[in-house]
Image 1 (cartoon, rainbow, N blue to C red):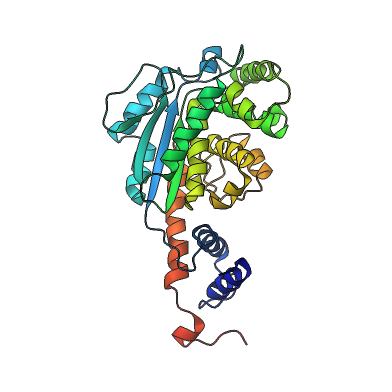
Image 2: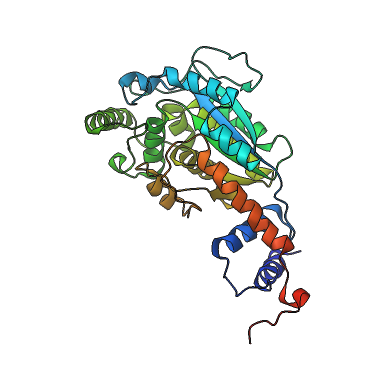
Length: 334
């Protein structure tokens, strides 16, 4: 079926349901997006993985977070034990939770619930030099692509854990978009005013180390192992014709990098929620993205993506199960 034929058939399928045209708003839009991603008028939305990528950041040594770097490792153990918000939301929504060690300090976890793909004990401190090598960027992207396309899922939700990663994401977004750092740097884990000013100063000095860079160089200079791997996973999932559920600020910056590398991946992305983290709305706007939910959440961990999953399922159920005016014997508009 040609694209124009597909679009005509898809819109007719949605518009002839027993409702006024457009009455289901974003649900109709989500249904249409899923149908386009899968290339079928009867799309399926039965299974979703929630993939959490974790890694440490050398920039944390500069005091840019309210929490110590050790919390990254502690939280991965919490994920493995089933006690984090991501675990709770994944269980509630029937998502397959997967925890990825992309580069947490301290070596392998030795836990069956943690998949080991570590690129090292965290990135280097990007205040003084590149966060990682170009080879590590490529490896992270390659691993991510395989993970994003792995298994048998209709959708992939992505989240992260890494003390210092709002700092990394802010500078990556700044370098990719040219948006001022002041508009992108937020409180992260809950910094007070003085600490926030210190964070801004550190990141301004770090950003001043380099001039204009291409996307791979930006990721090498300022990225995190977990966010670059997530970028690759988004690309892998999109290429496999899966819906990509994008979480909050960190994940949205990973999506920005993915779309910069491969613009066609944008059509697979559903932006789950609007975080109050300062830079999130700014990056969403740069991507032309309208998030589905606004719950005043800024946790990360894929928590917002997990909560958006039931809406995707409901949208597809509407498309496949809701009666048409003709089938139900209901009169259409006059």
